[in-house]
Image (spheres, rainbow, N blue to C red):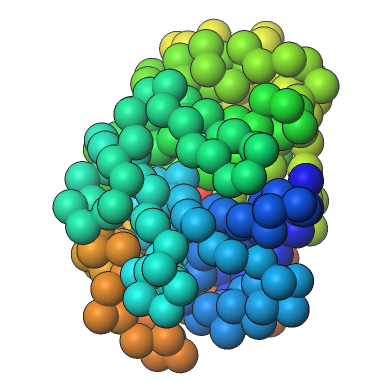
Length: 262
Ligand SMILES: [Fe+2]
């Protein structure tokens, strides 16, 4: 399988390109509108046909490029039915799957960061794309968008940690330069959701975070509930960018200033 991990430095968002090397059919997971040209150029250079753009959830920190890819390449937008994105082409349910060439991605609903979060699992390759449900040594916040710490705990423990221990986990964001982890690593070393934590301990940790209000949420969420339709790239969203926070405050303060895992 052809695989690329792409990064948006403004929001510390990962976009993933997966493709069948024989049929040249491709999917993109969690696109960023400002990176539409970058990703479109890569698809063209590699001779790929984009079949689907997948959303792990309705993002609060950036606008998706899904609608733009649909308009320009005829790809279909895939979102969990529980996310409430009315104009998505595929409203995927738990256990639903998508094919591109000989490859398959299975949807596992993993609510808790938002109600409509989904983890996409490529079992044959031993890879899973967790969005913000599980970040490397962390997790997405649970205080907006119908977030629910108890639900997130159960999603991670019962749906993600239930995958084979050597499964590679690719998160929706990382603010510290890390790119990939494994089920076993997070079971052992995740300070919030590792196996030595109880659900009540996790709920206390999440309740005590006291994160800043995500300044881009009021623009990004309404746009993403329409697959980003009508949104204009290159118009900065309100609020500081990750890059500006790093420049002013240092990388260690990004989590707090941006509202970790949004
Ligand atoms: Fe998020």
